[in-house]
Length: 258
Image 1: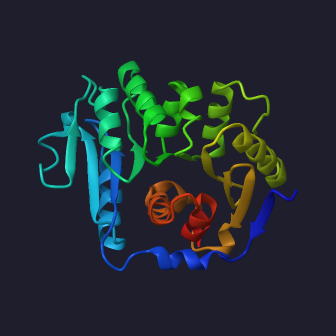
Image 2: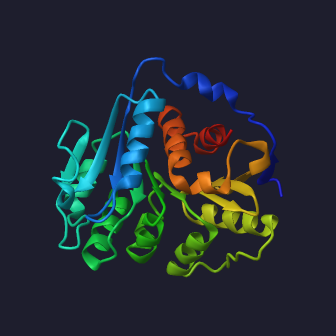
């Protein structure tokens, strides 16, 4: 299994030198609906406070106008009656204005929002990390087109990845009961078939895969916990490391884990 490697420390520390001393780059934090947007605000604040990102833009549906102050750094887009994104073209345009996009989720489950988000992800021309319930939404809306976008990263649970694979009738099965090696083998084949990057957690190991290569980092070798993996801050750190190290997804993501 020359495509699979377990790491106990970070072999890519040289990438840390690419983090600029002065503020640089732009990131969109996208998500929310009329009933919830806490995670998006928290992650945007985390990026502004802890990393040298020059522009952090919080992208929310306009159903939240009045609930969030209309200050610089907040963009409101057209929304459905249920309070989530409605316009694919508008969302795609906003994604293409930033250097990196972080789709955090909290999206209303309706057909209009699903089609808008699925289309925007499929046709985004800028790097895009999809996490939390956003993964399930793209699994249900144009998954074939989304998975062909090489700029996309799926930051997902194994259960969510199972839905993605089923949605495109992928011939290899992914199961919660599989061993680490078996899951790595599926990710190896899946990322050879589709150009997306994948980050997932299985049996205490964070797996990072792209282009057939799979790396695993045990939680015991990092400062991470399973809860931290899904709160959003690790996804934000992954986005930042990839922003400053383009085209080096596996190496930059491993740096984020350590």
